[in-house]
Amino acid sequence: MSHFLALHGVVTKSGTPLGKASTHELLTNKAYIGLVKHHSEWFDGSFAPIISPDLFEAVQNRLKERSRPRKSKIHHNFPFTGLFRCGECGSMITAQWATNRFGVKYRYYRCTKKKNCSQGYLREETLVFQLRERLQKISLPDDWIEYMMRKTDEWQKEVKVSSGSRVEQIKEDEREIQQKLDNLITLYLDGNVPKESYLAKKDELLQKKVSLTVKIDSARHERNNWVEPLREWILDMKKATQLQSTDNFFEIKDYFKKIGTNLQLRDKSVSVSFCPPTEFAISRKTGSEFAHPLLSLARTRADQISNDVSFCGEGRN
Image (cartoon, rainbow, N blue to C red; front, side, top):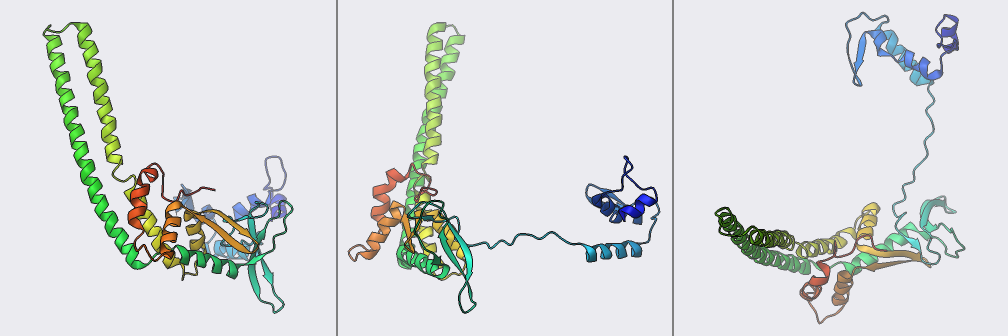
């Protein structure tokens, strides 16, 4: 087509035949059927078309028949890649397909072996089985979850009331300081206070006022600085039960990525560390002497947890 156009005088400015992209643009330009393009959208034009819509459609169909789209890479989308490191050499764990002697395809995970490493492969079904065992280990009974949620609701109300009272007291102190400032200004304007004394006292009162503003913001923030992370942790433990029966492996991966740390594969075995509250709950779950782990968990660790972003320290290595 480019050669045909060149024979009829349709060439580039330099006199060479049109390239493939330019020729393709000519063949697909809807302006030839009376349309005009504006901001990536076609509209009816005010000029007559030079070819019929039927001919234009026939050309488009022919282009589709003769087109050869680029081959795209096949993305296997292995669910647990990027989650584990090799417990021997520290390299990331990768995955690939394999076919057994019966012609059945399966996925397995192995070390990328960036260094000398003797670790073998682990089939995906075995990996999933071990992860579900970990989920069963950290999951808590439904009655525990219900009890915990009730307690956090109670604590939320207590914290809100306590914080509200503190904020009101600080606001009252702030109003008193503002009144003192107003009185000081009045005395200064009336000439009853020397300028040096006025400036010194004003500076002192303003510093106190700024300090109270900071305290108000801090008091409001303290309402949720440990109760909400505690509630989120309880819901995470509840989700562990739900994930034990799911076949959505990507959801299982995201969960362990959130609540687990130092995830490794070594000797065909999964190794996962959990945040202190989760380890605490696991130890109490296996014991018969302690029915509800939440009371000790929350009260003894509240001060430490209040400075953390979350209970489980997401993103730790």
